[in-house]
Picture 1 (tube, rainbow, N blue to C red):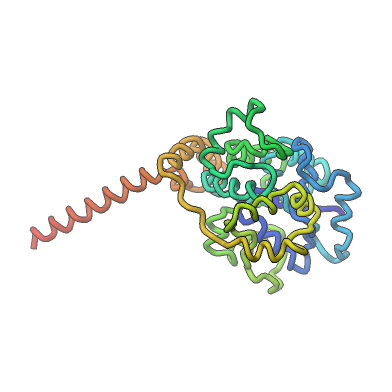
Picture 2 (tube, one colour; picture 1 turned 180 degrees about the vertical axis):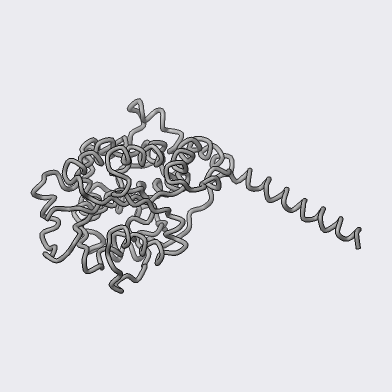
Length: 319
């Protein structure tokens, strides 16, 4: 039996949590290495697994009764070749794509990549502004192994990415999950995933969140965690071991991201608006709330408040 279940993305959409939940199911074996990136052959140097025997070796401990052998690599969605290569490898495979407001994806993705050697610009707005320069080969961080993964606009174009996937795999072989549904009711979202996989719940899932956002208290600690050596160890599944575990415990804290500057968020909303509309049409879901900027929301709330005051005033006169 060969791998037949792929969580293909998108980044910062709950893929780590779903990987963890599925790994506990008796009928599913999930690769102990998350993000093997084996099928991302257009992204040079990002995957720890380069050859087929090594890739298949990730699944050597799967048991014969298990229905699915799976893995999760969020770069498969943005890769131009990965989904096609997965189809060539196993055309009957099942894919799971988790999607989210692209503005939130790219912001969260930036906080992720600054914990590795890809990105050295700590301010997301500044990193976004480097897009054109980096596309021309300038301002690339010294240890960045794949500059394409710093193209935040391309990373966030989940509508185009899903359209490409649906041109390769039949719709019935791709489960599309909205991150907001996963966050609001993880039990229901997981039940729908199991239904897609034609599996019964076995009571193993505790719905624990995995890979939540963290901020480092000290820059030197972030630099250690972001070093190429630690990145290579992480790619081999050797994470938070030895000195890294106490370092992470002392220096990292779960923390919400500060809100983007309203004008900048409004700019991103307009950049991704066509892609959001494409996605909404494909999944037949109203995503108009993704395309409202904070300033538009503020205007709408102000109008609603004024209407409420006016209605109250008129009602008072009629009494």
